[in-house]
Image (cartoon, rainbow, N blue to C red; front, side, top):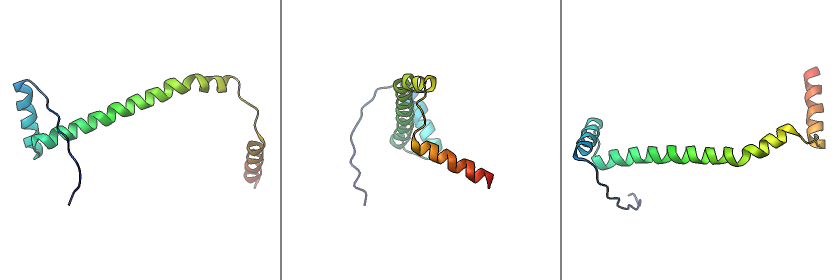
Length: 91
């Protein structure tokens, strides 16, 4: 048995939109509520993904450009890895 809790959202829409939603839900074999929930979930995920990606890009772009313009010297671990790579390529 499912223990998912639910909350209620009340929306108002034009009658023509309500009819269109009802028709689409019926054609999908869904209730209006399940159809709307599915569409809203997709829209919310898409919105969150776009915003989170954009914020990451905005926040980190200046730091990334600074690192590309003036890269730091390779540390010991990177030099060791590069040496192992060269050795493995030689056979």
